[in-house]
Amino acid sequence: MESPSVGPDGDTIKHMFLDFMQMQEFAKHPIIMKKAQGVWYEDVRGKKYIDGLSGVFVVNVGHGNQRVIEAMKKQLDEITFAPPLHSTNLRAIELVKLIASITPGDLHTVKLLSGGSEATEAAMKLARQYHRQTGNPHKYKVISRYEGYHGATMGALAASGVTSRRSTFEPLPAGYIHVFPPTCYRCPYGLEYPDCAVLCARIIEDVIKREDPATVSSIIVEPIGNTGGIITPPQEYFQILREIADKYNVLLIFDEIITGFGRTGQMFAAHTFKTTPDIICMGKGMSSGYSPVGGLAFSDRIADAFYGDQSKGVQFNHGHTFGGNPLSSAAAIASISEIKDRKLADAATNTGARIWKRIGELDNLGIIGDVRGKGLIVGVEFVKDRKTKEPFPSEVGFGVRVGKAAIEKGLIMRADPNWVALAPPLIMSAEEADRMMDIFSSCVTEVAKSVGASPSS
Ligand code: PMP
Image 1 (cartoon, rainbow, N blue to C red):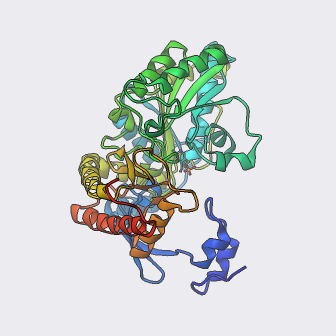
Image 2 (cartoon, rainbow, N blue to C red; image 1 turned 90 degrees about the horizontal axis):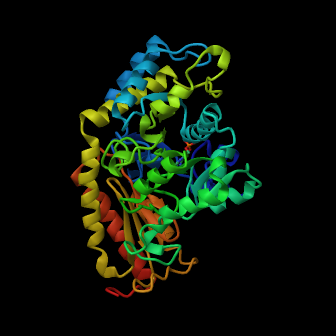
Image 3 (tube, rainbow, N blue to C red; image 1 turned 90 degrees about the vertical axis):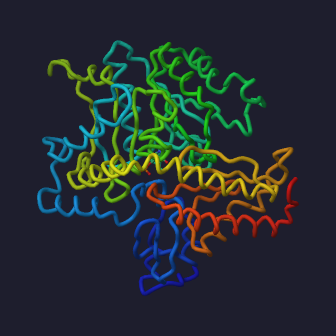
């Protein structure tokens, strides 16, 4: 194994397993961050990078936010742990109250957890137990989407639809049914919006019928799907899902682990898409990453099914040691308050528009097939031929090359073979956005030239 090139602790990297990471490759040129401020990272060599991905859709209020830091410092002196098994604490109560005030509809009850996978797992378990307690003990199946990602733990992975992340670990738990996502640009049914009448949503009714409605507990979806390439459905997609879910007494779960807390231009994508689910899963931007935190917010209808005489045993049979951790709660309260008070969801809309405009200026390169997203989550799909939508051959890896060039020039973003994504902190200024887009544009132009793209096709 080649030795890592950086630092006295370089050898230790051989003994770390980073997320979904080919460690031997990473160890050759490891990126080791040392500090961060605002929208900037600095690595151990002193190289600066614009954080064009908010970590991974996490650092919504930016790095080094003093309000969050001060809240955490204060909390450290008060109390840092109170087990959710036999108590709670003031910060957890305050956080639940705050979340209930920003969620849509009557999603007033909150279970605090420590991360995204915990949230999606808990949501699917909550749905099963809810049905069991309301006279439908056979409703257990979960409908989710190909290309979706709901976490790395077994249940969350079973609901996920990313083949590369799933297949190694099969067989996964039973009872998870996948449907095609709303990838309008490459419709799985070969249709065009709006003539399609949103078949990708309507077909879920047929799936429920064929599975037997008495066996289906929930539908879990990301409002905007990251892993498939910032899959952004038509506006009515979720209203159709809501109607189907209501018709068959199936709970609608929004995995807002990426889209929550201002990212899509409103506090939750549920607001952006004007649809209230039964359960919202949250994580990532909930504390902007200052401390691990996650949670579920759910409707009064669900919550009520879990209140009852002790003899009925209707409590939610689920928990994690660090749920409602006081330090994490303090960080989340401060971060969410920043998003509210500084109107960072509006900022996401404005900065997002600025980014879209700059991407539009690259149109004459002839390789941008589609631009997708809402607010400050923007995906760009590259194609070899815009008319036929033919992608670049996989060995070209256009998006990955753009991502590598960007790292060289000091910009971090999400890069896949055929698409890239930008999702910077919501506090990004106009000047910083322009600087980010200067780097982005020069990288895309450079890679387009290197593959001999013919402009304006
Ligand atoms: N859901 C979505 C939409 C995610 O993007 C992620 C993480 N990338 C998860 C769930 C899992 O979250 P975590 O990594 O915090 O377990």
